[in-house]
Length: 89
Image (cartoon, rainbow, N blue to C red; front, side):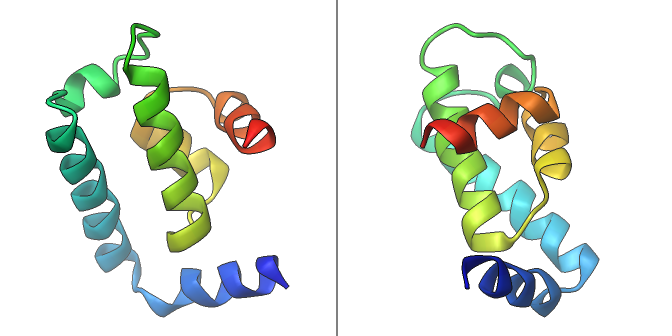
């Protein structure tokens, strides 16, 4: 049931609109944490980056229907890293 809902959300937004939404969400969450987006995408494990990546990854996957690979590209980590985030949550 969850996968069906994710698929519906995924196709509700056109590709360009989805990309704008993803970038906007990342910018908002980084701004709230006073963290530059470039730092988030650097792959660093320095606190508070892992916690911030986790919250962004879960939101992109669950609410926007973004794939693990696409989420990984936006966060500057590997696809398996995103899969571990989802698995642990």
